[in-house]
Length: 96
Image (cartoon, rainbow, N blue to C red):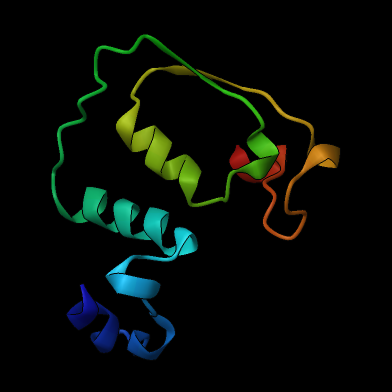
């Protein structure tokens, strides 16, 4: 993974947290990249409907990950005025 980041010139931006753990903000972009590069068969293919609550607290990259993992109908609920972090909140227009 770090090799890919070096090629993209972004290795200096990637930092691991203490004891080699990833920062929370880095987890979903890496999951998305893994899902795109490897044909991962979702273990959740039998799910018929997914309910996502508090949509405003998900980052924009989390939605494509959910889409790849859950190939089913989805109901997305939330209220942008109740965001935990207003700087990374998702709006309905961005999710569409």
